[in-house]
Length: 336
Image (tube, rainbow, N blue to C red; front, side):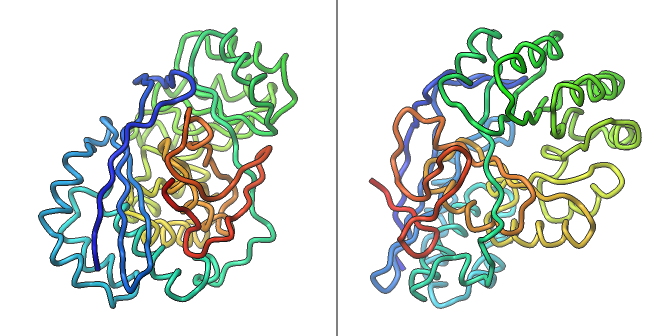
């Protein structure tokens, strides 16, 4: 098995701001695995909050190239299991490898990945479209630029209710709110009642990731469902969310790929939690991979490639929230 690494600096259409950071470019690493003439692609982005850098990912992959290449005959679950001890401190790199291996494995079987998993795609949810923090006028302009049935609104200011009130005047779309750990417990409880009246569906990670005492209080008193994101990173976190959150948002880069991500979603369903997958502003490679998990999801946020000025890959297409799979097998993505 041959391993090729491609790094890109993806330019965004607009400056993307959340409560803790702001950026105009997103660095990303594409892993390409070539086995028996088949090419598989995987992706992981850099992220300062999780100490993920492109150089760090490239270093650990190159250091272990020979071992990775020796696993070409394995099934994806065994491939991931054998790499996890080596990559346990860099799950972003493991994600890119796992995604690429799932891709090449499915392509060898002449099937799409969801077919390999035996999943039915007739009830797939639609994706939201994210509106980053900005002036109210610019946030409204972004909505008008991309009319959409569901918006994910980034918040984390002293004027959050006013922002949503103004946005609501311009659309009948469903709103989902992501405060990225920026609210206090009392603030979140109070905001939940006001936001429910403004047509908000749920709140994503309003409190700090380790505020479990606050999460319990909010879970009991909120007028809206609460979805864990920063509080649910790896497989062992899912069970901890029961009684603290109504659902979990799984990020493939954070948990180490499609293989553990799928297990997290299946476990969450068994535990009665709502299921969601989010993106990290990936290209069409990472976004196409997410699409194969759609049958397991209640909600999805896979608009990352739509936020780019220019994509470096092609794969699934998204129109007005509806996701359509590419004709290509595997995850259905190829580099341009």
